[in-house]
Amino acid sequence: MRFALFALLPFIGLAAELKPQLLIPDKVLFADDFSQARELKAVAAKSPQVGAWNPNQGTRWTVADGVLKGEASTAEYQASHDTHKGVHPRIVLTKTPADYVLKFSLRLIDGKPFAAGQRKSVAPFIEIGHHIARVTWGANGAMLLADGDSLQLDVAEDFKLEPGKWYVVMVERRADEVFVQFQDGPSFYGKHLTYKSELHAVMLGGLEAGHMEVDDVTVWSIKEGDQPTWPATIKARPATKQVRLKEAKAKK
Image 1 (tube, helix red, strand yellow):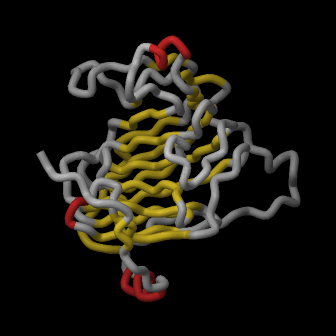
Image 2 (image 1 turned 90 degrees about the horizontal axis):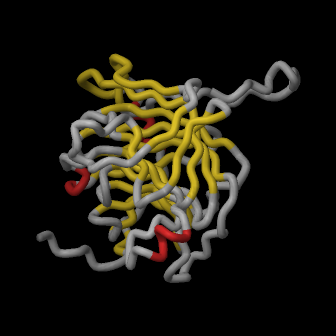
């Protein structure tokens, strides 16, 4: 858990706290404030030893200074792999049920700036189920994707993740719906048949050759029904148009 700055900066404005807009949280299923230092080791996804956090593609993760710290894989690891080299920090939160509310803080420290249109430029992302639902960046700005990352459901054209700045994020996932909010930033909503999947673990990814940090993670189960204000919330959202970015891959 990061040390609060409010005692040092008494005149700083307090940001509005994120609250679920679609789903009704129930019980806390998992929480981690990273107050206990430790190193995280990757294990096979189906291994009974898999913990709450599973580093991906050989990337390196430790808990220190009250946060979860990640960086790219080693040069040796990258040289020994033709694909999935771990050129940017990636980690999977495995403690997610099929439907849930998730809140966490995220900060990119550094890395190669993402350049839309450059084939090998790596964008940061928040992935809800592997290639199921993904908030990422591209030529259209920040996007919520579906259908194997081939279909844009929602977009915030001018939104960027600034290195060095903490972002509080909330993810609400149920069946074929996903709602993602950034505190004092945009929100993304999508409803798509491909979201209804058994794959629901959350993966976070940073910038190529960079470092990133995660903090204050909480996962809740959900109650039946919607937030009472959801009909008004969804009605007030700007109309969005689905954009096909590429052809969806054929299912095996």
